[in-house]
Image 1: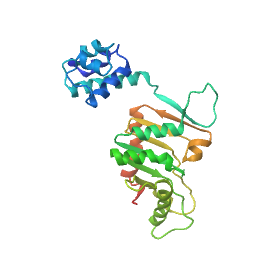
Image 2: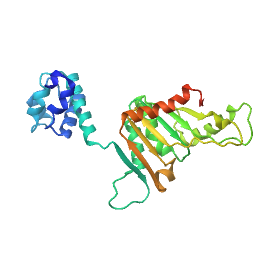
Image 3: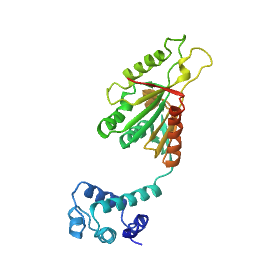
Length: 264
């Protein structure tokens, strides 16, 4: 079956075309540097010659949107088969043979790749402007929605109203770690932290979910120490089912009323 018969066949039909060529053609089509229906001459004009016959066998005669859809399926399937389901993420010294990815680099890439929404949970934020700056950029430029779950310290004595304590804590958080101004993430806190004294509780998780497709969990806080100086270990999971489950777990706290929202 060819691509015209169904999307599922596209990766097999394009199997002998390199991933870099597929991406090159997709970018050229999206940027209107080459127009559909494709021809050998048009492909050659954007530097695609050696694999032109294989591309035309699948994409020839199709319009731009159909070509982009087929290429997206092929690239997604290619990535699914070549990318490991989980990657070790690390802060700190390591041996020469280590293959872990750097915590700060992974976070930056996750934020920069976001298209729709980011869910972030963190225990400690300090000097986090550099860490969160890329997220603010995609919120401003791409309309990405962000939801934060942030730890606040329990008060030593009850405030009146209790929410005033959360407002003060999170105003300090925003001043130090979100100095960019709007757009702001939605910021939530554990309502149990409004009461003073024992039992003590903390929102101790450190994780990020991007577009319900990737999830990052780490021992590293969103601090310069956690990102650059400590020894920290984490995992980046390319697993949509897990990412959706983790996202639902956090968002379920909102619908169940377990967390309060602070509005800047």
